[in-house]
Image (tube, rainbow, N blue to C red; front, side):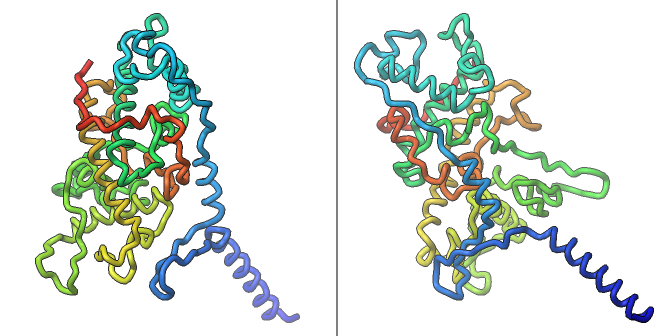
Length: 350
C-alpha cells in the first residue's frame, strides 16, 4: 500500500467515525408512524417507542381503595367545618381524604399539608382553603364539562400525580424588552421557552387564549385574504398554542386536523371538537377558580407579575392523548361527580 492509498484509507476512517458521531445524535429507535386517514394525505401519527414507554410509565393510574358504605352518620355531623363534602357518610369522607393525601401530599406531611394537627377544623393554612376550592372545581369539571372529559372524568390525581403542586402549571409572562437592542413589546418572542419547544414563537401562548378569549383561528377558507385580517404576529400566537397542545397530548397536528384543509370543521377528526371544548374548559377554570384564589396564595407561590398558577392542556394530559390514557378514575369516586349546581361561587380571601 503506497502513501496515497494510506492517506485515503485514513480519511475514509475519519469520515466513518464522523458519520457515527453525527448519527449518534439522532433519535433512536427510528420513529414509527400509524396511518389514520386516507393514504397520501399525511394523516398519520408519529411516535418513538422509547419516548412512548416513558409516557406510559408516567401515566399509570393508582389503584383505588374500595368504596366505603354510604350508611351511617354524615361527615357534617361527625366533623366541624365541612363545607363541601358534608353530605357524604363519615366512612366515604374518610376514604376520600385518605385518597387525596395519596394523590397530593404522600411525601409532604400527609394530612398536615392542609390541616393544623392541633385543630383539623380551622382554615389557618392556605393549602386547606385552596384544596376545598379544588374539590369544587373537580366536581364542576365532572358535571359541567362532559363535552371534554366525557364519563372518564378527573380526580385530584389527574393533575397532581403525587405532588402538592402539579408539575405542569403556568404564569403570565412579562414581555418587557430586555437590553438596549430591543424597542417596544417583543411579545415574548426570541425568548426560548419549553412550552413552545424552545422556538422563537411567543413564550406565553396561554394568556391570550386560556385566560383571555382572544380569537385563535387564523386560517381562512379562501386562497387570498377575504375578510380574515389576522396578522402574522397573531398567527405566531396561535402556532404557539398549537405547539403546546401537540406536545402535551403527544400527537401530531393531524390528530385534530385534516391535512387537506386545516380550517375545515366538516372534514376534521372528532378530536377537534373535543379539543375546542378543552380550550374553553381551561379558560373557564382559570377565570372562575384559579384567578379568584389570588389573595389566598402567598407571594412565594405566585408568578413574577403576582398572578397565581393556572392550568393548561399539559396539566392533565402530561404527554398522553388522554390523561392517564383514559383510565376512568372518576367512576371509583362518585362523590367527585355531583349533580350540576350552577356557576362556581367565588372564594373570599382569608
